[in-house]
Length: 349
Image 1 (cartoon, helix red, strand yellow):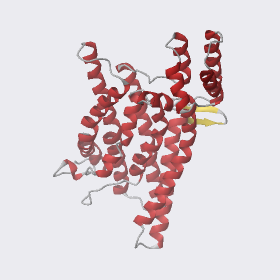
Image 2 (cartoon, helix red, strand yellow):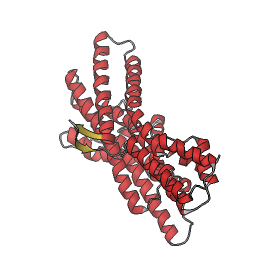
Image 3 (cartoon, one colour):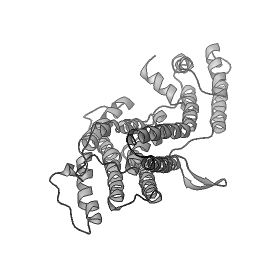
Image 4 (cartoon, rainbow, N blue to C red):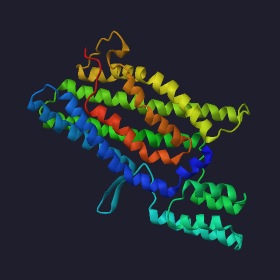
């Protein structure tokens, strides 16, 4: 079993639909579990009043961030009417199966009854749901390479989408917005939680906005810019004949290089610098705060590097691997939550 077969198996429309449906439960469950852990960890040795406020805050922040993440992905409908479109498409299972039945019928008709028994069994499975790994391999390897096969596989086992620089730019805009929504939800939820628990002050609000700015620019937006820049350069080399067209896996490697260079290495520095020059003055009566170092604002740490797992997912989506996309709201949730609690790791501020 090669990687290509595994990739085609994972990108089946039916499997994508199932994964998309499971994300809300996973997001709410994971968010709730983390809230319990964080409440327990931060409430050790504190009085009951502190614990009560911490529970209320975490409940509000997690609820706001999770709701924003899911709304960004799925959109918002009221009484069956679509108010906001979703940023992640999810075709209805009935429509997917209808297309798969039509594709199977068209293929069988083109073969005029000359179809191997194993292939017929696989097509029968495709009429009802997703294919197994073994069935995927049978379709890919046992059917001769013809136009009929390509039309069939285009429906049952779509190939990774080969985006050009224009398509990549559009995708990055969509993914950047998808990442921004849970961060905004987290910040608004955090501010509301402070007001409700009567713990709000200028510093707590400023910290949430700063952390939201940091999470978005360092962990989401600048990484997307790096991905787009790297692919644009690679496309230029292809047009000049310097390199061969990139396979999805090679394209993913190029994207990760751009993410590392722009986001992981320089993202925290840029985000801190922008925060010092534009956000600090707003909360210091129009005066710029004097900083000894750009990292006086927020020090990068190991957990920030771990948060870049969503960038690996982004790289996969931009490379054409669709199975990663439904999980993005779950990954962006962490950035939204950190913004909501106003996470700062520099105790001198």
